[in-house]
Length: 165
Image (cartoon, rainbow, N blue to C red; front, side, top):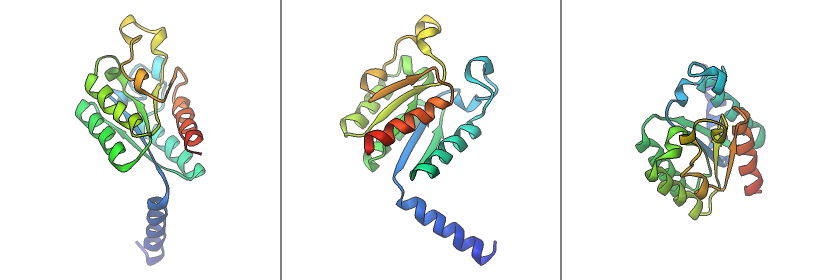
């Protein structure tokens, strides 16, 4: 790496450290975007989602951190991190939506800390199987966006931007 490339990277990293952060947290099976049921979840991948969210962040003056895990413990930890570091959250809890009291308890800590937490679902759970109709996250979220595909993440980021303005 040349000196100018290293300096450019350092300036970019320093600038990113000064930008407000929004964390986009994704639950189980979302790492399989593009492969798992593309008729429901679309053909774009998690890499595409990260690029989409990070591009929105660059265009709007935010650093957007996109994370995904199939492990409930990781999602709970990221909620705690959001509270501790004062970071708003976009949360797609995926299957944890319907039964994770631990994630619900962690998510409520975000909103009680005065931070926005927007729940997102790529599909519309209310229009799917019966067990998907109940959300333990919606009652503690600032808002919920469903059925808009990956564009729902942009809507959630816009909502957080609006709330913070």
